[in-house]
Image (cartoon, rainbow, N blue to C red):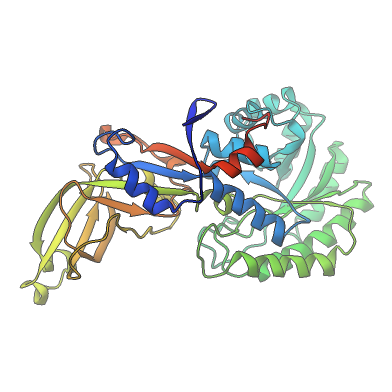
Length: 419
């Protein structure tokens, strides 16, 4: 095992299958602690996601949305690769800058900021920050005269997993031009336009609409004497299998840039979160209890009362890694870590470990019969999971087990100043 910071990272000689590696860990008493849940974190997968971004959107600088997952190794690897960072608070700014990332690689992308946090951003020379209202301009003018403000407009995919424009963004036609004039009157420097179509975008055309508004507003801003050098395309990029693939979204964005910003010298950035964080993290949880019940108790259909069903309790739940079910509208799908001898399946419910009946992970799931001590495997568990997890009821968060191939260590990571 090699050491990266305070976190041990396993260096493997050849390419590995994450699920098989999880099996090895679950059965190796030297690697896993009794029956505790754990996450296998593939650093190779982080790098693969970064390379995919550079392949599909080479003209756009990714600024990782730190709120998605603040895991220190993930942040340090992305810093090593040259990512920028989207921060929304004082704590997130410090998390990133304490790895050695310079202030020009951060955007304080919260349109409604705490006053002391604005002062802290000035102290750390973080200049790029967003706004969508006149009150924020007045606040920033007093506390951070060196700020480079980016106007956030409301252009949304209403079918996105998590629409955001109810809370943030101004009307791009009726309000945005007024805010540009207000910034001019207050002497606040505006340097660009930002938008966020919603987390988990389903309709890629929202990006085209937003970029057209951005073009129009850049022209208005330039009329006030602002340089308008930055276009921030926010997030919404999927992190795993999704109704609308990343490749499709990237194609729409490339075509829109060619149409509205051909041969531009503007700095194009975006704020992907789950795109980088979701796939590298795989959760392995242990079944701490199993009980046979009438199938009707699970299906709520008395006609099924003659068949057996099973209720399983695992040592992670909605107060832990599965908080994404409540907060992110995501429903993770898992299965047994090890192949089972029987093909017979029973209607099953997967519960979390707490004493709260809200702690439901999966319901009415067809699955083979399992026993106490068996393991469940959930892939794509890095986005909006551990970042908002708690230790409610005294249940610990999963342990992190970081792995990478020797080739990645030698070629990408070993000599980086961010490690």
